Image (cartoon, rainbow, N blue to C red; front, side, top):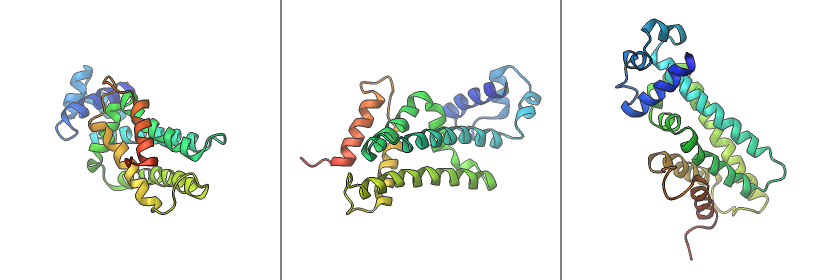
Length: 187
């Protein structure tokens, strides 16, 4: 039941937004009572935190696996992380949109935990860029942190426009992004 509550809440939060979705809306879609909801979650905020944690923990684990692949170059690892981020829009689109849109509703220790995990993802991404610079695969005359913010900003914004059923696949978008970031737009 807990997973069903999360799944239905993701759909409601995605459609109506966190603020506009009530606990009553959630239980109504499931045909259960508020008591069922409160058995699993103390509040709607705790539910939102759980959705955020599931998403960030999953992408952190995927990122870690990519970084630890010894047979891949830093360019391949960068490309794989970009692909993974864009692929999440297809595989976990609702969670991705909620992750980027609804963080402002998480407070206190949960917010500190969430920002710590988001920062870890960014630092891991920057590590890929720094290692690529050190190995000579990437240019080293630009600040690694600015390159990190640029790439992550572009990838993270994809949830607003990328249509997995559209004319381009996630792999094609990731390939274009990788090419653009590594080689620019200059002819």
